[in-house]
Image 1 (cartoon, rainbow, N blue to C red):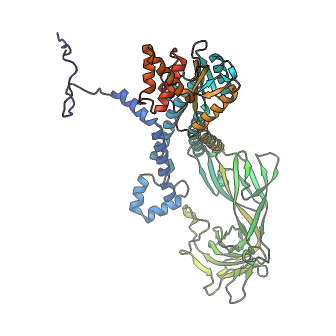
Image 2: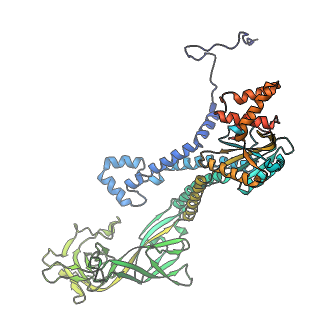
Image 3: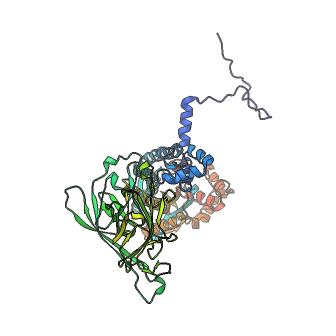
Length: 627
């Protein structure tokens, strides 16, 4: 049977001078549960949340440096082809899929958990503090950053107000200034009131952090269940909100294309307004306004409605917004193949390259027989230049449209199944029919010469008309409203936390006498700020004026003006055989101020004790009022 030796009676052990830890002292092991609690405590610190927020911003930087697969798969493939070694390693660490990568998602989730674990307990604690009464009045108000005392009564023989009445009036005045108050110790020799205001400061702080959570949630919802796409619509044509109706479509991570709302938009007309002020040649022809008139049908069978689409004035259909992001010309071309059949007829979208809408054009005709045909060239809206001159456009308006084309025949490669850029024609495997550098020359089509016959009996090409087109950027983001509301809430919470000061005021009243031996009521009050508050002194001055206005009829005096008289009176009492208690008080009044901080503060405290006499201790130390 083992026994434990009793402790030595020689007193506590002397520490080792060398600083080495005693071998019998061991730190307790945390264990799995302790480690989990420690990790949770570290994660839910505000410093950790701020670090994760900064880390998230840094982690998003590669998404703007490297091409992203979800936005431009062709650019990612080109990067891999041009940088086979580096590209392979970058792809392994998901730098081409930054915002859906495992490491970015981990930072995002950790930040979310950290904010939740930090804000919710803080909100619960503040709710309990709000419902609780202000802290009890400290025993020694002179230790507070702002402390003052006043003597009330004695003017023209006026009776001093009763301490209970003084405390009640002080509570009423403080409540009028927005403080929540609690009156305590009424009916005793030293009643007091505790007051507090600025609770909305912490509310603003909590709202700010909750709004950050709202932003994170809204962004996550938008990226998971939103989508975006692009579509070019020519005058007279319609766009239907289905998957095959998009030129490009990028869904959210969890979005199903079957959820698309089947609305339709038809472009009735498009008008571009250009500057025609001849007195301003520098800006002549500059675009001034773009207006698209469209017909919207919310769902099949619904009544069509007319809408106007402009830049920065998107079309909104059930939360799906369509933005006007581009426009141009679409010449209507008819191509007849070598067999005499119409192989293509319709508008061809061009890409403007300058301010006068000189536009590049690519047309692929895979249905032409016996050989497939391809065309590349330019559309000049207002063409100038005769024979032997390089044709060019001098105005963005459609005054003299002209097509200049090069023609090719052969296999366009569309039957292989590999995707191709509709705005690029690979001419290497093709045979040239017409070009500016060839013997046959380029094809020139305008209003005077709308038809051209291709060499070797390959068919004809005809210039029929010119239409306008618009480029639509279509977005659906279900988290956008939540993100906006969260941003407004965060801004409001930030203003509240910056400009609302949280303060506490304690007021105590007791009967006493001033330096002239007149009876008075001593009003003692102190202020304490929660955090930094440079306006605390100004608040003390306002309260001083408030007390003065309230009791000016009875008389209000600063007790410091009577401190000398009180000290002399006490000294005289001591010399004629005072009690030990009086002697102690005098000693306190004349001793150096080693604990209060200044001699004046000690003298004021001694004067207060002489005038008020002994009283019950009504609260904890002043330090207990500061959380």
